[in-house]
Length: 570
Image (cartoon, rainbow, N blue to C red; front, top):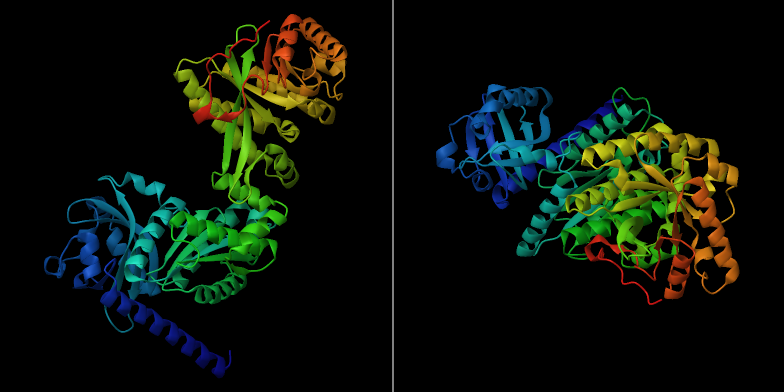
């Protein structure tokens, strides 16, 4: 390195330290929500501002001269955690992290801390940042609000903090910006490192973000590969400049012990009060900007209202769907299955919908193919399976004998061990008897993966789970396959059912299917019943189970009617 480069680096380092010192000076003078404590290297408190008093409940008269370990629990003091932190600070000049402090009244609080060691002085700055997450006396709820890998606030904590930051900004007529940061290539699986490497990179990214931003700002990890940063006193233009610098820094950073560079990062920005005034709204705007940045192959993008409509014009992506799963945008609707002779509800079919933030409620045919093509189908299946089994358990506890049918992708049949482990694990988790779950496999799956299907279905039958063959009659199955498959029920396709009672040919075909099923020991359910004529005709030819809009429409569990359906007039 040349002497000129060395001098330039020293100048940059000095400017960064001056910048940090100015931040802490600003905190001491202006911010009642932030505490600054000056300690000597033995941990004795020498200075205490009003922010520290507000957070801890201790006045400066009460606390100055005491060891700062008074802010820790007796368990932490016994483990020498306060003193170990000081030792690390001496060696590294700066330490960032989260932890729990004990207030004067004995309550516990999750906080974010930055320790700084000043050159040529035996002083450490302790910056205390209230995360707005109050804990019980045992501090047990901390794990729900701090990410275990990075120690950063998680998504729930971010929303709590952001709401409070917005209240402060309104009170002060101030501004702030929110950055949504996505390490896109890690999410897409294009990074070739092991999961352990990914975790190490994520932890290191968290450390980089903590050291890049000021103590007054909040860094959070909201997903496996997604972070968010609240930047105080920041216009969209300032946030954009910061975003560009951050993107370049992340891409050029060399990770210790990992040869590969960090894949591309993408950043979306939304600001208060320009874009939204609520925590969830601002986060939604930042993530919409992020989605548009990804689509337009830009590294940083600020939210604009036009981006909402532009999302209608582009195809859905893998990242959209994974975000929908991660952000709980999926919902389950249930369509009752009815005993056609009594009107009693015997089961329901679980039907997933995507409550897209821009496009509204999406039917499964708009995103299931995307999930199968992009490898997200396993995550989607796990989500649907867990929600269905947990709801079935609720009904069982209420005394309702409701069997829940869950649709399975043909691709899931190739992973016999994974599918069986998933189903068995969830049944055990919710203590639901296997008889209350039925898996539905479309008829096309039999033609695509007959051997895999048979193997997987046999394994599921061994744990007590029944299966049904969906959309039967669409022409993909041969009778020999049907005879050899461990299927318990066939669901006759709606195109054969809708005209039963009006077209003799359809009635004859359905009647033949019923006789075939009876000979093979299979149960039958008719799909697509939309009229009383169809209902009566099915009963006359011996069909005892059905579903369709003429019986009950699919709906969310809150409005689901499980009372018997009124029988039609004969």
